[in-house]
Image (cartoon, helix red, strand yellow):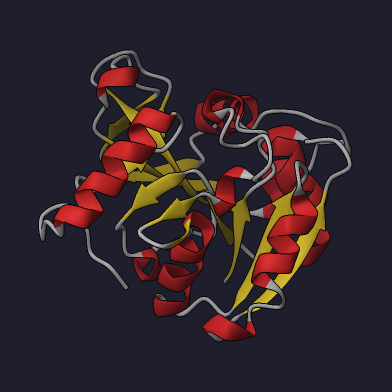
Amino acid sequence: MKAMILAAGRGERMRPLTDKLPKPLLPIAGKPLIVHHIERLAEAGFSELIINHAHLGEMIEAELGDGAAWGVEIRYSPESVALETGGGIYHALPLLGEGSFLVLNGDIWCDFDYSCLNLKQTDMAHLVLVPNPDHHRQGDFQLKEGRVSQGSERRLTFSGIGVYHPRLFASCRPEAFPLGPLLRVAMDRGRVSGECFSGLWMDIGTPQRLSRLEQLIMQDRPDAISES
């Protein structure tokens, strides 16, 4: 299975930090956030990675190169204009191949074990959900007996980690569009599985959360982080 890291976001809420540095290159414990992702993916056995980029994307390519430093092969999917999550994945499909693939948001922190992910042949997506954080108490989707739906009871938050099959994007066109509507259609058809992850997960969307994550790491709390 190939893996894709979404790294094309402008990072508006992280400004001014992201005015001159793309969000994936923001330093966490002495190295860029995206490098932590690459290391975890390599540990989990992923050797072919695709990274999309838009804002200051040339800096990402210059920093990461071909991935040899981490024992992986990195290919890039540049976007002249950011295509949003769905459009970015659709644009990268020629690089992702014909089988299912892992996608993770580049602006999260998680100690999830990516090696355990898979997708049933009959499903279009498998989502990793997490307990609702304080900044998103309403959640996104309902999880019941391993199936994800739009139910309104006991909703969980989508972690930004998912496995998808190319057929999820069969009706799409090359333009900017969000991933959510595609997932909801697939849910209504009963084609989305999921699981709840209760370990460390953070959406690093603001300077405050970035600072909080840095504090957790520097404190070296065994219950807060598992460094590779």
